[in-house]
Image (cartoon, rainbow, N blue to C red; front, side, top):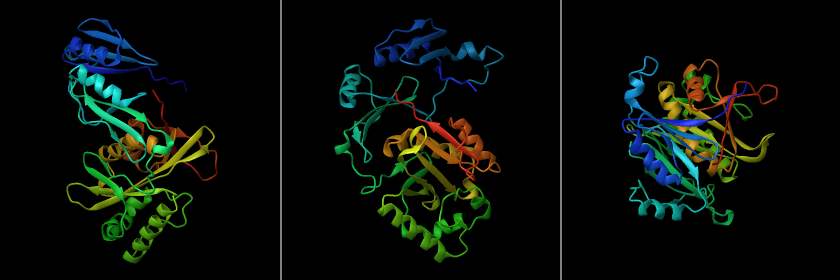
Length: 312
């Protein structure tokens, strides 16, 4: 199968205004008119299409021309502070100031005139990295907070790991035990096991906290290792979540935070994760997030998907 990334297309109510913004940000010239314009960059193209033009077409009436907070377009830059100063000189309002994260990346975000979020990021020197196994970061999505699992999460997480439908979709490959918990004591022992692995720098097991209820509804595990895969550095992502939350929307949200944070945080080029074919919502979320079927070539390692991080 020959599938190649080519462009990002923005559907907008004002092609010329949006294209002028991107010309200023990236220092390049676009071609086209108020209906369709293109801005070629290194390896791909930004395309700007008129929402009205597409809505008048039988094939594209579904477009709205409205922005979404579910997507962040990221670029690696040499000096994120210099880029921040440059954008301020262009009177571009940023969402936040450059911040150095515990995993070593330094970044800031800003919006284009249509509200789409862009992320400029640089990677600090190895010796400047904060150790994620000394200071576990807390991550935020629209509906969830991800932070290191705690002993006091046992009662909440028991509801997830005692959920037969949820456990059926969990990945326990290469684990010392299955994830079905039939008692609170077993759940507590499992959390102790995860925290011990964190202290030994094996992996991070994040608790997924529902922002609305404040309760832990599942966990996310991630680790990375050099030469983990034949293609280079990689890591395994596990997402365990109560069956009530096993929806495309919630799963895509968690996959998106992995996209934005985990490649840099764990210094990996590829993330692999498993999806039981029974879990249709999970399989669909993986496809929508850009994951492809992955052949691990190891007996028993079936139904895996992978996504490669392409640095700009």
